[in-house]
Amino acid sequence: MKIGIFDSGIGGLSVLHEAYHQLPGQEYIFYADTEHVPYGLKTKEQILGYAIEITEFLIKQGVDAIVIACNTATSVAVKELRKRYSLPILGMEPAVKPAVEGTDKKRIMVIATPVTIREDKLKNLLHRVDEDHRVDLLPMPRLVEFAEREEFESAQVRDYINSQFSEYDKDDYSALVLGCTHFNYFKPLYKEYFGDDTLLIDGNLGTIRHLADVTGITLSDDPDRVVYFDEHHNILYDTKTKYYFSGNEVNDEKTLEHLKRLHNRLEQVRKID
Image (cartoon, rainbow, N blue to C red):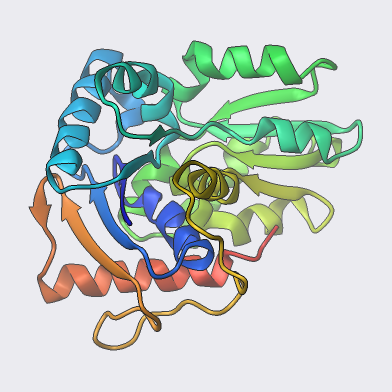
């Protein structure tokens, strides 16, 4: 089966990487809209336009289903895309429900882009599941910029994270919800700041399991096997992927090397929770 996955940039690779673990052997098309990243600072009209253009591109490539690997694009565009197109279109939302259900009565912090935090989709989700009003929302848009530059543990990144969290008492929190797929690259720094007792929760696994339910693809019986890339940019088992950056297929050595490093980073941080 051919699966299309798209994001504003390289954050959605974390969803693709989880798909490699859970749904190996499928054919994937990954589309990063690098000309327009970050979406979190764009208008709703702009984001919807980008999402429609990308969806039509992926349909022309013959995909059987599409995953919007971007909380921001999901919040703005998923309803309209489902109205326009008949194939399965899955979105993402911050994993607030499992955070609320899986932790004690301490507080929960959701970090996301400004657009995700402003949109009704997240507000409605909180209204449904956050009965005790335990959730705090914190925009962290610069993490998208850092991720796009492949800057994950520099002094500048650490200063930004510490500064953003400094207004909150970290001892009050039992979970940190990553409401943007770009944010997964920084898991070691969140754990360093909050400590081992605070859970890190993202929506990638739930999204891929939902994809399996919708498409009928069988989940892997060995999802925790190691998924690294070799020196030829080949994944170490049978999975085919084509990468596109804003409609242009990626095949140059420099960019493929960049993607390999990103996947290997995601493999390193995947089990941090």
